[in-house]
Length: 257
Image 1 (cartoon, rainbow, N blue to C red):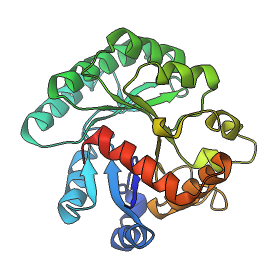
Image 2 (spheres, rainbow, N blue to C red):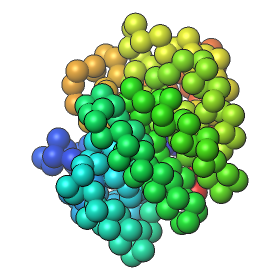
Image 3 (cartoon, helix red, strand yellow):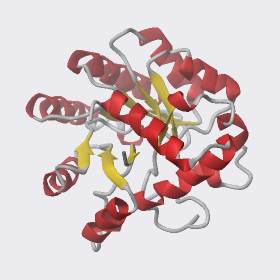
């Protein structure tokens, strides 16, 4: 059983000059499944083209990133994802959510589009991949209100506290996505994750962002998932093979891959 990078944007321009080598590097490191969250209509084609080139390794999602929720373009963006969902096979609705770091004025619209996409996930029987930045309270409340047996997903790039983690776990069918921040010296995330059951964790890189130590500040790649897994093994005081087996099982179960 190999690793699954549950969140990687390998279709972005940061990889345009060496994408084949980047995918090869990941596979050689044992990271053989690469799950690609969409951003908006501008990234759909490049994402799907990468999946066509690597059908056994790359798997696409469809959604509107909260930072792409703009009043003047949101109608066409919603029409785009609904059209794509009706015409193509995806493993999840994502990435979706709420981001109040860049723009607090669009909160009401972000909430509306987040709710709409959660309902699409229930309709298509797909998990959701949730982006949250400085908006955990707003996002978790929406998911709690809409939660049902048909809804599942992951809070990607989890950086919250013990109470935040408990609320996610209490949703029953949701996971914590753990990435490079876990390796950052002063993040404090290690203390939280130490208390979280391994069967509620999936691994991710969020490439090209948030490269783990000792590559922090450089372009992230899916091969660095092994560094994150190694850190998690140290925190949990268990062998990395156990980390690989459980997190891969979790990812395969959530995304049905």
